[in-house]
Image 1 (spheres, one colour):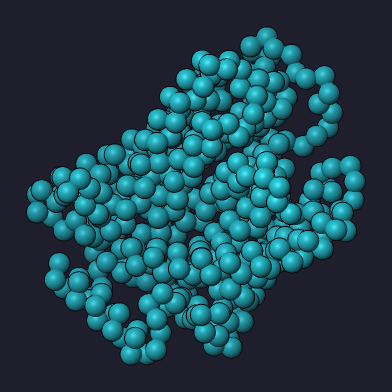
Image 2 (cartoon, rainbow, N blue to C red):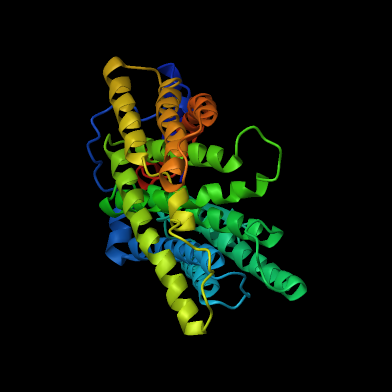
Length: 406
């Protein structure tokens, strides 16, 4: 443990000697060559504990996302529902699956600590002490498990809410906001789990797969601010902020130029799957339950899939091009992420009114286009600033970083 601490101290000293603050030591330079598997990675591969648990968490969060999209479409196509529907069960089952996998990893890490094994190299992020050291929980699984536990608690609150008011007709009720925040924590934990193994192929693939799930889900929570008299819809700002932030975070964490494009392509595939699944599941379940569809449905696109930015490949291309330019010109890590964010945010901001017009009946509103021209780059620059700090934290908690100095 002393070697690990000294290694980090020396790394911090070297960064300050080079005039690079720790908070801005970003992977915007380099060739993107994959690092060699560390001893921690070989341990996790031998036992297959790390990949199995991480993929189980990802399967759980993805299941919850599909359950939510199904539930939203049910409200649109059929109407109010009760607590005990298949879409709700899918939503809760996904959270429970992620929570149980996280609990198992916490117990395994705790048992390893008590057996005198090197827990500091455990998959899922650097372990932290819980309840005064009674448990040692890898950071990613701690966040995922906490989110899953809160999700189930808010589920009980939602059940109580249904018992008071009966049918559920709105998305932004207090229990729902708590549910959305809770499962967002679980999805953030999933990204941390995979980022901790970024020097493995399965870790990098997991980052690229888990980030689109979080991109889709994150802006939903901003619906809680929809009633406020704001000049811009919070959901639009949330789409720009979270999509740009997560694309840049994944790119800087993995350190490869094509990460943003691959992540955006994965997001598009997930959007197509939800586009088919949500209305299909709502109609099949309605037929099985003997319930009619609404009379005024028309040809409206699926609710949640149509709100996912459809031009993310263009935003990813802008981020990738600016990343390449930053490496070529040697831009400082202090400004490169903000420039990347402003470029990506500008594309997302301008694309949202166009997307709304494509899925609606009228053309893009010139006033809205003008507003998003200003909001997009500003929100994107903020996203780039935050993404840079998050990427540093994720890289510090990776298995590669944890074994430096040994």
